[in-house]
Image (cartoon, rainbow over all chains, first blue to last red; front, side, top):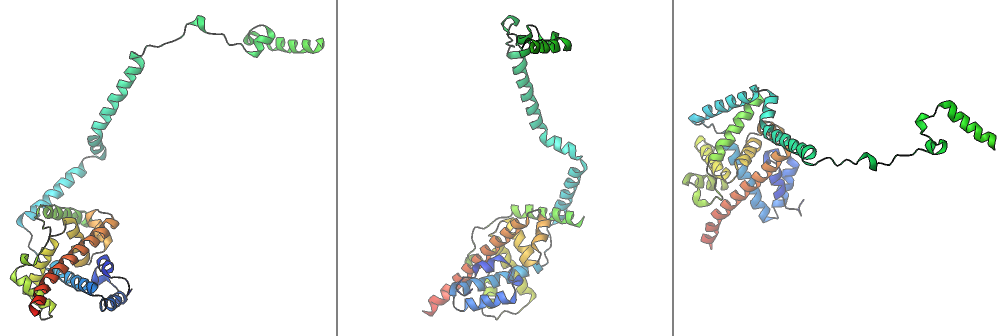
Length: 157
Length: 131
């Protein structure tokens, strides 16, 4: 610690909160370091005046009590309003603008852009493997027809 | 209930402090004769503990604190003056504990530097006179 300046130690905690070993180290350091000795003297005086200031009885201004009571009433008024109402009050603008944007987007999607559907003539009928093999739509075949077709193929071979 | 009331009172004090004038820097010429004498006596260990001296010291503290922001004043007075813990200050003000530590560190440093400047300025004439 003797090589390190002690100003940071002085600023880190109140002098009264420093341990005896820390104070011994500070005293050892300031014997050889003039800037730190000045800082330590200033820190001691500052601590002394601040302690005196905290101990001094101060008569509050006549308006102090009024202001505290006003703050209490204000706080109570805020707390008496239900949480949802408070939330709604603060988020009302945002929710309204979001709803408007959603409505505008919906209008653009469904009303402005006309549906471009293809005509039934242009659609190509999808052909399943069954309809190619059996020459008709697979949905129209019964189970027996399918089985017969399979066994007939086997007999041909 | 006590914590709630403490928080409201602390915030009211902070609001009142925000309205008070803040000095960017403190010089020896800002000190009253009594404060100047108190510093002199304390430096030479000739000051006697008395009610009057305590009042002068408290006034000097007010001057030193006036270089700080109201929040820094609050943190320093509670921790260094009233020996409150960081946690207690955090609860009373609604700040996080790390914020309290940072404010107290910054306040302590500023006040110490202001005091160092005052002491330096007081010692300068003495050294020039001795030459």
